[in-house]
Image (cartoon, rainbow, N blue to C red):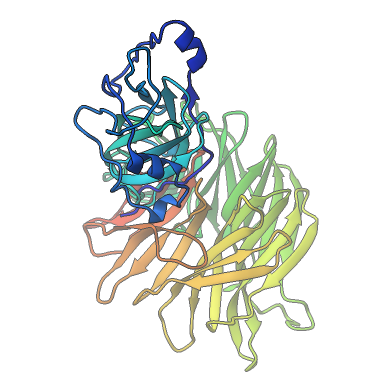
Length: 554
């Protein structure tokens, strides 16, 4: 599984003023770690290797080897001291990273030499990292990432310094790299029956996540919220029970968002009189439940985000049984006052009686915009109705900025379930796609530019049903997707994986198959600033679903 990579960078090192040392009678300062031997002579082979500037990836280290004593190479010429012997070059390697190194990041290799040198070679064991480096500080920089070069384990970082007169010296330091492969558990997964049957949404809060989900009771489903500690992976305190829930799961809610006053808000779809309403509650863990605000009859909420003191709810407004318009609400976090609301439906010229179905599934802040994704019914070139992804862009106050509908260029139907911003600008959407006549849904991901224009897309080659419910970008630019996949003749399994971009095989993947024969889904994910991925969802046990939470290495 991919782990680490080396990235060559600027060259550097530390040298001592040899003139000053020689005036003091050649008294060399002591080294704080192991150094080269007490004698140094010249070597034509080492000198030529030190002068080389060949790229390290194509150069072997056969001309330079590490001896047990670390003494310099033999030779016939060199700078001589008062006793007529060649003056040695003593070397010390300094690595500015702790050992073991357990996190991704930059490692600087500095080299101290007892007198000026012309060049320095750096090796990882016998593999060249850089040859012919100009002495500076540091001599070499490499980045520990998650690609499989050079890999976890102990590495001997060795420096060979070459003086202009042909004398060489060397030193070595060990560096232990112990970075876990991407997709492995940071702590044992939190999975147990009750007190919550399924998690559906997660939001980063400090060192941990606030999570929304649902509880099965004799009277039906109840919305619930709990906080999970990021260090131990266990709930902090008892879950907060909220109101009845009409629908649950990935792309359906309940949804959670956090604000700057250490509060969280949970939004869910409340059953009412054969229809539904959106419901919203402010919570603080460890305190009694706050006020619950209720929306208009016929409304539902599937996703939510927050910007400053404003909450943005996304879902649908029922027009008739089975038919909806996409709806988005801008709501004050202080008192739930509706500041703005926006409705999206097919224009009356195309849908005179508003019979086409449109549903909002996901929302994200992208720069200074609010991006809403979902699905809509639209006519294909054969004039038959198709479900297609719709992307709606608004400013932070709710003013429309643009809309886009999938042309269905690869498959007959597709739908957007989640959206996330990209650090380099634009955003990425995940969901599903399928051809009519086939029941299988394949996971589709599409990239968009900063002005909302559609760019690349990819479909994961799964043999059966698959869908993406949540998406994010980690610190190294990989796209993390959480959802579900169904293998032939099996129930659905939770599916979490990382892709490098529009092309390339997944960097890692995690499949969770619950103990029972039933639907398992990774409903939501949240990424912290270090790139760790929190994933929450539900998996089927013997008789009912149970909630799970994971924290994965990047």
